[in-house]
Image (tube, rainbow, N blue to C red; front, top):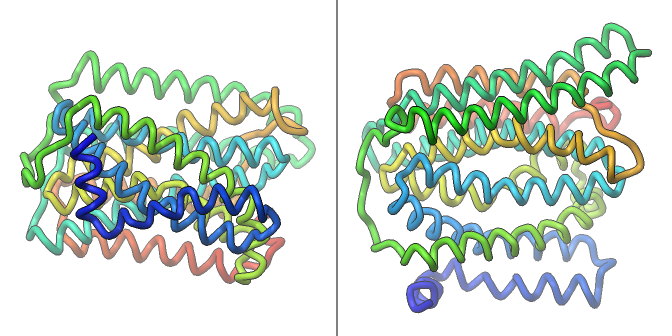
Length: 364
């Protein structure tokens, strides 16, 4: 426990951990203060993300960057799953779909772009394992095709709701199977293909593996609990800030839900461990597309007022497809510099500006 306490004492950012109990206390005694709860929940997630970042790096030091990135993406995506589960049980299916699409685009463009930019400002040219990046982007491309088909068929025949629901359930099973086979390929049958491209900076000594794993699990649970408060307050707070529902689900929810992973990805890039950053960003996006979204479709038959399908509004499908193709393009060489990150962030900013200015009914 001493390394954890020392980390908290030495990092001013972690002093924001006082907002973690503050948000729980406020939610209990003043649950109608939605704007205040929204701000407190965001401030609480920031230091939790920093703790999760250090714990992930410690685990990656023992397991390797590929497995470390997979572990962080898995635990980090529990936040997105909890946010979506809470919204789904409340019948906010459009918010669920917006958060799913937004998480895929945010992880692929914003998280990866920020890692390339900040890592490239410190290191002239960085290298990463392009085989691993190709696998993750390939899985992501498969998922976007599966998300495109229900949207395309429903647009052609608006009266095909039962067909779309049945198709979505079948596609959900196929995507989960594809994700499982992808993990089997990368971690069991061909792990040598996914070795890191560089050693990176040693930096501070890693935590003991027991403390690191316990911190990963514990902090992820805290992030999930804070996210529940966040999702309950975000809609009312968005109205007071003048944000559209599409912008809230696609940008705000995905940025807050992925804050923990973003901290780990950026920290890895700054230490010249770009395999860890790419593994977290693309691994998280592919997990959301291949596991979280299909799991929510299947879970919706048991919770919520109605089943959920994989039909997204056309703009969301286009953005996911563009984000995926952009990731395929920029990771093809296995090398990166800061301007590559700028390009990714510019594409993301185009989407964010469009959604912020979009009329409220345009995403239906």
